[in-house]
Length: 461
Image 1 (cartoon, one colour):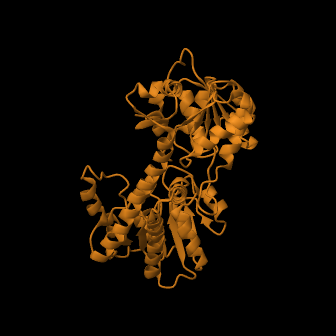
Image 2 (image 1 turned 60 degrees about the vertical axis):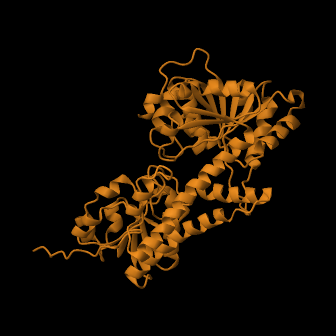
Image 3 (image 1 turned 135 degrees about the horizontal axis):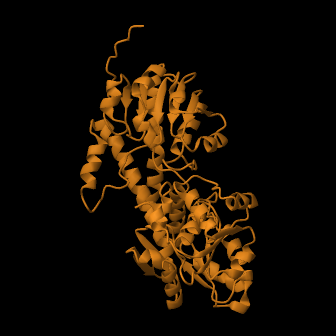
């Protein structure tokens, strides 16, 4: 199903009044999805420049389908934006807090924006308002938010409820995940809160989505537990890839065998350069710090992060083996975002690899369909190409770092002719080894046997 199939053609007879604090990757998706299912939504952000952009129907980041649905929601007057959190809170029955929770130097989640948002909401909230934690926060945060609400509005003590409603969005398919989620998780402390939240998600639940109701600490913990487990699966298959390379085995075939077992499943078993993005690295460390604070040592979580870092080391080692001396060489990186279908370069394995190559004297030329500008801003020493062919022109080595669909349809013969050395390192196993071999390129995949180039006869002039 497409995201437009999740749109409610006519508003609910009595749509709920919803405010969303924060218009980042989680907040803006929440704004648009809540409007799509029939509610009246106000999005709030302290960044006035971002608010003005949104008022013009422009998204501050790339997410498939988002901008089109944003414009539709605004045209049907279900969605508006403001930088005045008081204005939004005064009219809302439900307020989502979707602000960032970046890592502190010690790895714990920085919850200052959550606290500040809760205080600002409390100042203008009406009795009975439900404040919803949407940001990923450690277990116990709701208790702190509740205390802040009571401190700020002692006249409403006990009348402002706190609910945990974690998001399970994947960048690149976030609108699909918001409108057709596998489950809706609600952690609450009263029957009233459960009822209001189930009514809020009614159009989604009525389509068959599972509703899971728990106490608040369970809901808070579940989000971190899910992200840590998914990160563990990725690190496991990346560690497995190293073993496969040493043993002469094929990690994709091993993963296929594993994935056929319903106890394991096929998802998140693709070997590559490791996970990136804002969530997994941050949440994994935050979960480990939470365990430490609660008095439980959980060394597995640290091992997951270490193995993830080794995936970059492995790719760098392959480049070094292929080129011998790196100084003065030119390496093309295809893909700069941490995953396809997003312009998000936060903790991108591709940019980490680029940074290490540049530090060793390599000229790195990158191309990405959506993330080029963000990558250049993050790493000014990176040269940006206008397309994949411009990136590989004159390169001693090409690294496929993000598996954008367009890379699998490249003219590999043209790639070969443009390169100085016909060397391809596939960090995502996205290319067909036989096609790469037939084009006369040396192919070095991840966790699979390398394939030497077929001898290509030179063409007559």
